[in-house]
Image (cartoon, rainbow over all chains, first blue to last red; front, side, top):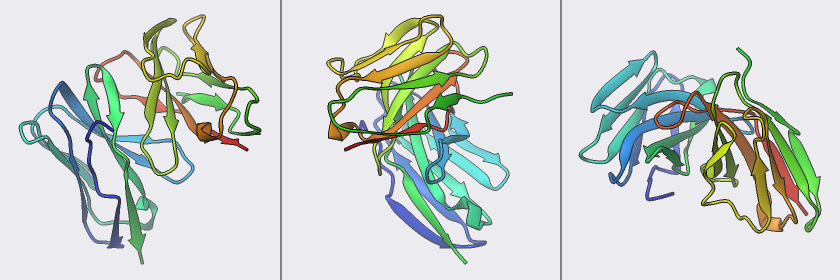
Length: 108
Length: 114
């Protein structure tokens, strides 16, 4: 969707750290959202970045570089329940454009 | 606070039949969105309402899809006639206002067209 690129799948072990990268075209950029979506469920809001830098929220952190068109979501101390798809969404001209999502698989 | 409600949760129809989905947004949310999410893809915006007016329907296939939000609260999305490629999850979301406001999603309606 509109050149929002994120990896298709990542696998990590319980207790580990995983970083999900997202790159996007910078034209019209207002801000960037991360959503978590468990299989068969609705996306749920995780974070919103509008300024450069790192936003920390418990085990999850999100980083944004506006000039580079780059964001990442950092998941620390992975738990089995973190197995889900993580969607990067760019707010552009008042609309959200989603990436295809990164499926994170947490193994014991 | 109650979340976004959608019904039905699942629907199976044959191609060329019609189907309608209903959404009740979070109380007080002026902006309502309908998304289509095909398996393995991110949600794609179909239509955005601000109160009872359409803000953006540029990606709505208007020859078969229609949506309304007559009183600025509930909304319905209709497909008539359905095609095989319409098989997807239809997500409704709402936000307090448009632009940079966090969108909250309903559980979705999973449609299978046979």
